[in-house]
Every structure is written in C-alpha cells, then in structure tokens.
Length: 213
Image (tube, rainbow, N blue to C red; front, side, top):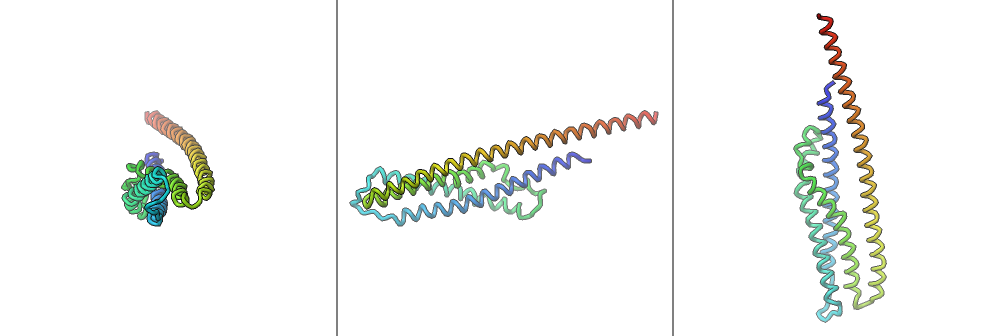
C-alpha cells in the first residue's frame, strides 16, 4: 500500500474541489456585478432633474457618492472575474485532476474572495442604499409620503439581507468546522494505519532475519 500516492491523490481531489468552487464564485460574481452595475448606470441616465430643483444638495451628494461606489465595487468584481476565470476554466475544461496545480485559484484565493464579497455582499448593500436614495431624489418634490413608504420597505429588506448573510456565514463556518474535524479524524486513522503497517513490516523483517540466522 503506497500511502504517499494516496495522500497526494486526496490533496489533488481537495484542490480540484476548491478550483470548481472558485470557478462558480467568479461566474456568479461576474453575472451579478454586470447586472447591478447596469441598473445603477441606467438610474443615473434616466434620472431627470431641473435646474431649479428643490432636492437638497446633501441628498444629491449622497446619491452620487453611493452610485459611484456601487459601480466601482461591481466593476472591481467584474474585472477580477474576467482576469482570473479564463485560466481556471482552461484547467477545469481538461477534466484532468493532475493539472489542478496549473490553475491560479490557490495562489489568488484572496482575489476570488474579494470578488465574491464585493459582488454579493458589499455590492448588494450599496444597491439597496442607492435604491432608497433614488426614491427620495425622484419623489422629493412630488410626494414625500411615497419616499417615506418606500424607505420603510427598503430598510427592513436591508436588515433581512444582513441577517441572512450573518446566519449563512455562521452556518458555513459550522459546516467547515465539522468537515475539518472529520478530516482530522480520518488523518488520525490513516496515521494509525501507517504506524501499524510499519510495525508489522518491521516485525516481519526481524522475524525473517531471525529465521535466517
């Protein structure tokens, strides 16, 4: 039994799973970022304000800053996905686990996580904030009650989103801890098996030497 080959095979399978997860994250990040940044740009283009508008400057400044940050965050996630994804797909398309180390998903793991968090975390929060500000800018001069009613919907939605993100992260960490505990247990079993195998081999060698003598 060759335990080195077995361990290398297990490491390659684990790295291949990480490659597939990184590829999926980058794909979802690129699609989400392209969609939400497009909506943000359309909001600016379609927004029409007169020169003598009564909308406060502070509200317009907040809207402009929020929209700029929203587009920047999603374009950053889109840029990372566009740069890294082709190299990962080039390796995953071969369906050869032995080539997993040719993929940059391990060395650029922080870039993958940055794109994922920027697109699905920070980007969505900024999108909800922009939605709330857009309603105030659009309806400030027409109907304050409409802006207030819309804000009363956006705020609970943002709270629910943050709560779900925290619960999801907690559940994910719990799952990872469980998997790590199981992995450590399997490693202990393998080390115990190696120890028994080596002792048995040494005993057999000693017995063979004794028989020869």
